[in-house]
Length: 154
Image 1 (cartoon, rainbow, N blue to C red):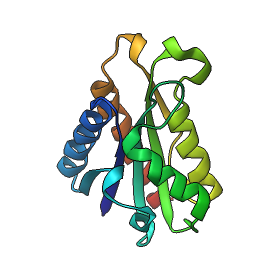
Image 2: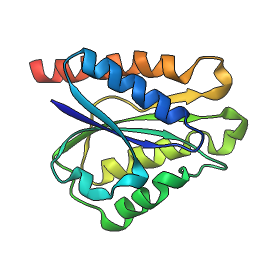
Image 3: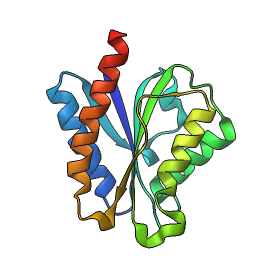
């Protein structure tokens, strides 16, 4: 089974998290690839399948530069994503309490609006928590795998 991890990052932390997820997924027998959002368009959803959004929140609630165009294409194009299952791993900083983790929230909302099926609830990492985002990514992807397996067994 193939898993696409789509990454929006400003400083590189989301990319590190995505690479940790790829390693775990491959160890568990999945085919996984992490790709920066600036490298493709919404045609990435054409085949359906499993997609993970791994995104930081930049500035005052914005999507990082390399994910902005991709997000805007989703909003304007509103593709039918009924054949897509998704999950969002969001990174943020509660220093920006009014806009904390908005990028992850925005992706979660637009994917749901386009008909994609959420596998597990959005993860919200806080840079002020003291926990490493990469460590949380490992724990979270294990939960994602478990949820996917439980759904397949049902």
